[in-house]
Image (cartoon, rainbow, N blue to C red; front, top):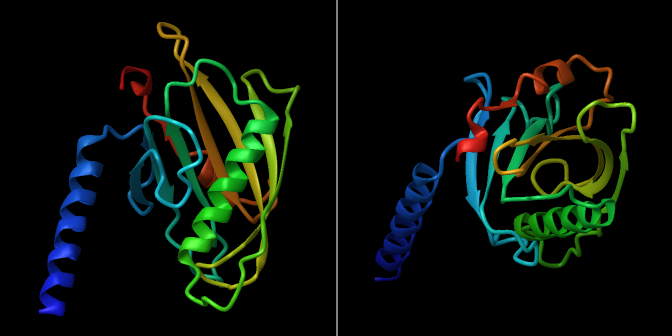
Length: 196
């Protein structure tokens, strides 16, 4: 009976997860080798991030393989009806909630306390479009079970009709001059992202 209940719960969550992804328009485009996931806000692992909308994510082929150059390399956007840039303080707070939440949720060792993340963003004043650079120091509950440093590149697209801003985050532990960033910059917002 217990197995039957677990199976029904799994089936319901699978159907809900699929229908949730299928019902939300994709905002990102990437090479077919990149896997995708769409998650609706509020995020189960970080419900205090106070947005309405969804997150569209693309993961590189080797994002969970420690021996690959594209380990922990991925991109995501938040389609959440922003009408102004997130402040540095709100970016740092949102990322802290996001990474602390997801790493605690994924952690299987209940006797281990996941260390808090440290997050730093600065605005790139030399860029034409609103652009930020970030440095994250987070615990990797998915693969290495160690602290890791991630680099973040954030740029916004302004939707001229609605004045909505769409943030696009690109993330990798590799330095910004590594070849993987060329691949990351091929993950882009779809042309009609403003229409969704």
